[in-house]
Image 1: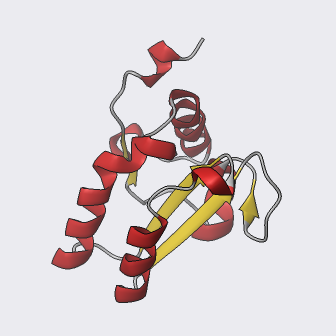
Image 2: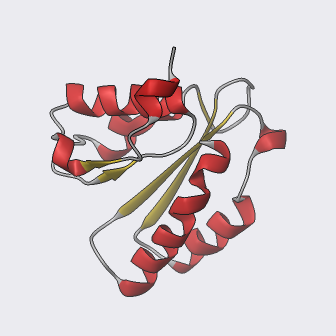
Length: 123
């Protein structure tokens, strides 16, 4: 979510350029269209790489795309999230909620990569 995605963009680009792994899903959540970040960069990558799917969701505005919290779309897009590596960063509450959701779907902690300070930041 938001500017928390900045560190992940370099990882995404490198992963796509090196051909590492299988399909890549980039879930990006924002509150409103006016605050959507990295659209141009992600659009270029999406057009250049068939194995990349960029999923945008807005939580505080009606629009033609996906709505609600970005993590609510994981199962719709990926199917079973188990057996997939997950890199999660952004707003602390989103990170905590996403990790909880993944664990509920049977994803092991060894497949979830995050900074780790988020649960201390959530009241």
